[in-house]
Amino acid sequence: MVCDDVNTMITQTGTPNIFDVVYPNYTSDTTVIFTATITNEDTLTDVDTDTKIVDDVRVDPVIDSFSWNDDIHDDNTLYTLTITAHDPGSQDLTYGVVCDDANVTIAQTGTSHIWNITYPDYEIDTTVIFTMTVTNEDSLTDVDTDIKDVNDTEESGDTGVFCGGNTGIRTDIIDYVTISTTGDATYFGDLTEAKVSTGATSNGVHDRGIIGGGDTGSRVIEIDYINIQSFTNASNFGELTVARDQIADCSNGVNERGLFAAGRNSTGGRTDVIDYVTISTTGDATAFGDVSTTLIGMAGTSNGINDRGLFAGGKGWLSYYRRIDYVTISSTGNGYDFGDLTSTGQYAGGLSNGVNERGVFGNRYDGSTDNTVDYVTISTTGNASNFGDFLVPRDGTGACSNGIHERGIFGGGDNGGTSYNTIEYITINSTSNTTDFGDLTVIRRQPSGLSDG
Image (tube, rainbow, N blue to C red; front, side, top):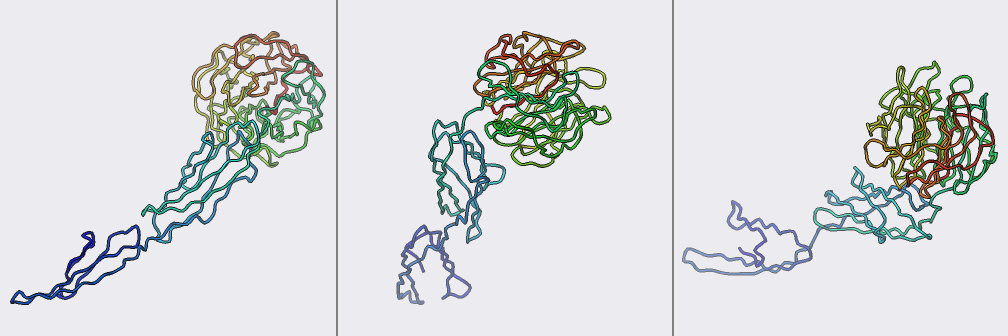
């Protein structure tokens, strides 16, 4: 017996008039013709034919559903897309996602059906279309689409806030300024209690600032929060994992994770603990990992949604440090070596221009005030370079910025036992000495700074 499709496999069994027939993998319904012959000992032959229609029985995979981690989408923000699919033939599936806007970043996670989607900076509200595919081993595909409206959010806020500090006694005062202007600070409200040496960070234009730990006469475990555009008193957010002051801080901005690192614990000891919180959700902090050394008085900053946080300088039991650690904010884990500051010291205020990748660390203390401002490129490991000097040398300043709008400010501070209400500003993407901005509402050292930038 033969078949007009040579790809059809025909095998004679142990019984001469019985054949096994195996069809190839057709991509559509196919007609084939079999020719059967019988021949006797006299070599006389009879022939018959049979025409068969062979059904393509391959089965398409199916996208059952898809989901996002958030229904509301803003520009400059990362979201997670999860695709749920199955193959009726139990074949392995390959997943794909594309967007009609090539500027949308699409990255497959370690799990094949989960994708990280990051929107660019839009100038107006924008609609984009995602096309999702699943393909099985037979190269059959199912397709689904999703249309998302992406909000054009304000790129970077412009309100800078200075929290608490020591005026000779601990204070609960919160001040604010408009960073892009110059002038004296205005009263914002009060912390939940008078405290100094807190850590402070925010979720940027999502408008929540958090102020963690501090010293009220003893080390504090509580975290306060403010709504930055509310200009009213702070409320309780939750607790750190360890009560402490002299804390470093940073966040990944509108992606909502804030970190508090290192500090002095309730017995006066140094700690290496890093905590994290979801800034938009009140509650207690969770352990993240550790910085490289048990330290107090580190400074922190980050590149915002680009997701790298830095913790720099500090003091151990016997000496001052210049090391800079880095972490990936959206993960958990210990700090890695980034490089070194240009000099050792603690109490250096940290700030950045966000996704523009420059971090700046202010004056620090290593037995006396070191009038040095350093900068680094946050996305690139390496040692810091000199940025310039303070107009009024002092350590223990609060620091914040309006992000990609490139202005950073340092407020308050101390030099040799003299405290200041001075605010100075820099243009972050330049190098130069600081310029006078205005004054805080009261003279004080070691306030903490945050902004909606």
